[in-house]
Length: 335
Image 1 (cartoon, helix red, strand yellow):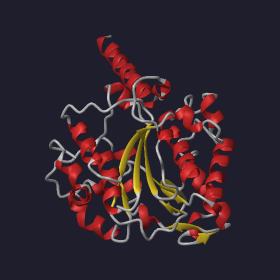
Image 2 (cartoon, rainbow, N blue to C red):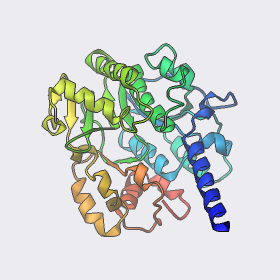
Image 3 (tube, helix red, strand yellow):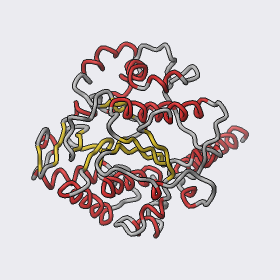
Image 4 (cartoon, rainbow, N blue to C red):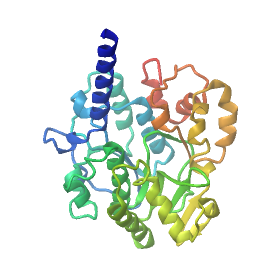
């Protein structure tokens, strides 16, 4: 009986933690926060965007960031000094620098002239856009994957608003984006286009393509299918404009001014092999596989609980030392 009660308690606790981690209720809380994105100047087509869509900052009582997230932002700024790098927090919160690792990571990012960190008020951001009803009617918040789907909506909405490049927070940029075309995405496999990095120009055909993505979301949003609202949207767009039924037939094609990159450009190591980034024995293999890549994507959904000592000779730590040096310097023992 004691064992059964203990098992039940553990299950309920785990379920509660899951609900808290998936909840986006904090988006609606009114409290002191950073300057909202609505009040800053954004250069159309000249920016890289990251979205932090968890409620971790609300829970912690101040803006927080992980070393993995900070590395993604620094590497983007370091290798693309001519672009503005924006990190938007959907959770309300303010900076309180108390010398924690997170505080030092944020200060390292703010030392870059081309990095800005702001609040994104979800209701204000979606108002007057094709995404307004999805948020106002509670569809996003009721999703089984609310946080992930809130992020999916934002990536397409931000590119529709401003153009530029969207990036996930579980990447390291290892090559300048200077040679990328204004409109692009990358395939993660022969079957799917991924949504971890995308680019649309702010005007003309690029804007029209971004709007198509929003219309797809508005029509086909699903709160029960994890990948439908992120990779599903861009995969359907590519199939339509490239006139293909199999994504592998779109590799390296330019369809209506939209470039479709093969996996080696952004997803050289597929998600089933994510451990290769964290295994010292795979260093050479990963370096060879990513020799023509713009980013490495470490598949946070699977790898989030894997931490590495700072003296590791794994590929992930090797890339971090080189491409996010200020962030790496502030890590307390593990990355």
